Image 1: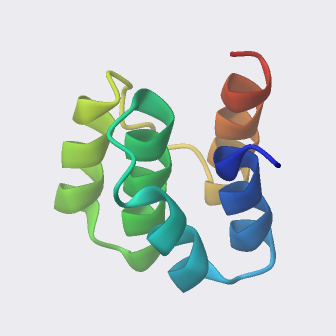
Image 2: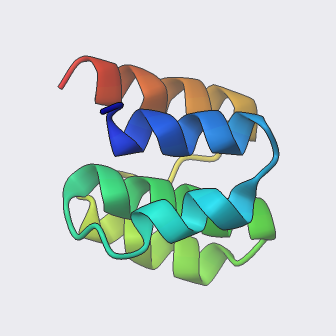
Length: 79
């Protein structure tokens, strides 16, 4: 079975944010929280995004969404 976090990233790349959100919303680990925060950042809900980034012990960056997704993808791959 494919790593659910990589699957969530694929869904985000396909603009299927709802399905990606469903995959990660109940994953309390670092990567679930980080992707959850990223999805809220896409929606423009920055206060909620910051909350999830804090839960992931990650800084909320002001980089582009594309750069941030690439950064998260590398974190997931290299874990």
